[in-house]
Length: 437
Image (cartoon, rainbow, N blue to C red; front, top):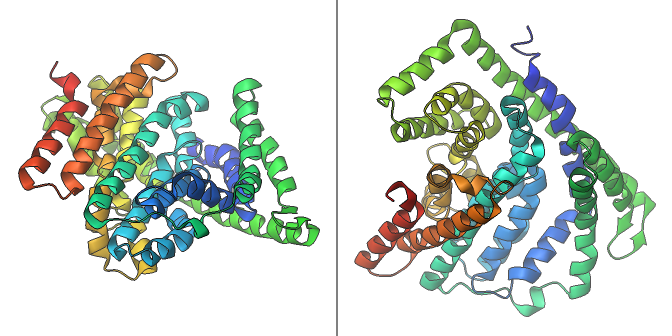
């Protein structure tokens, strides 16, 4: 019950910062913003090869940037994208895998990152805006890898684009996109131009979002519908805040126990000694620990618990604090698509009516970036230094994107076995080239 346990700083973060952004996301989702995400994604990617799957990727990235929950992402965007993909003849296991993988990426996409960004602020002392800049390129890389994986699947299964009559009209895209573009603009201008704190900027965006609830795409001002949406927003915000709060409180108890008993120090010592004091074996042990912890608890809790144990060991072995925290956070997300406990896969498979294990295998191939990018962030440290070294960060981005493209085609394409092996090895070589130079 002391400040190092239930009523610790993490609980304070969930109350003072996380809850405000959860309300922001609930307000946007209660209105036309969700349809705006779908329309923008459809207009941007619907006409491309494998268009329906790429619409799922874009809409999940946009929706995930405010929801921060893989399960909520699958349930919301999947209700639209899964029937669209199956109707166009996509294999059910592939359609469900696309939705599960793309929705999982929402938890690494700023600004919310499944509440992880705000917890990271408290644990590292790094400003929120700096964490957003550090996390944005790796998150985009993840969706680039998924996009390229869909292209590889398209060569195997002749995946069709979205028919022209099913794509939204330009007017609909412009009108509905305003429902999320205006609140987002207010949020970003307040934080980056006016230099307000995130806690102050988010309520400004919420007030704009509340006004947007009163308007309907087709009929304009609709007060009755607006108040119904306000009730929905309040209920959803309350549910999500209670869920995140309970997760953070439980994680705080575990951290308190680790601190009081000294178990955290012993486990850290075990990781360092078990790896022989070498960085890369320590990284692999940490990744395994994150995967195991993530099977039992949500991503944010797995990140908090895991970073409190191997995190100090990784920092002692030479990693920057933010680098170590982002590495742990990414690997805490593995369990959303990795058997035996893969929450996003279970939901997507159930909605598509497909065997979950088939979906999981396809999801692991499509989401290979989730396994490789965190390690790539260590080998190419400039990828998270967009603010301080934009040129080096851009070069690292291009290098890793090229490697991920080769790796995705090596794992997924229908080329002969030797070419696929060579492509995979080439991709790994490109991503980790700096380790050998």
